[in-house]
Length: 104
Image (cartoon, rainbow, N blue to C red; front, top):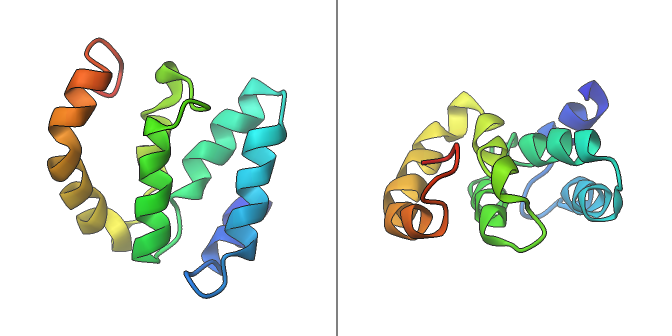
């Protein structure tokens, strides 16, 4: 987990190779625990575009409904306003998509 976090600290829109590598780990891993961990870490960088891309993963078919809240837990304090605005903008869609999940 620490190695994944270290990777995300250097990720930006212009240097997204670490993010892309972790997305690949998430997509290809058969281990539920690893997928859960990686999903939470993907939103842990400070780059607005990467944070938004990570948060939008909850709407992807590859993310299990019970894991959706994990994408929010990794948001760093520097990106909390970005995440808050994203949550407000997407609340209606979230509420309709995940009516009985941990996210709502």
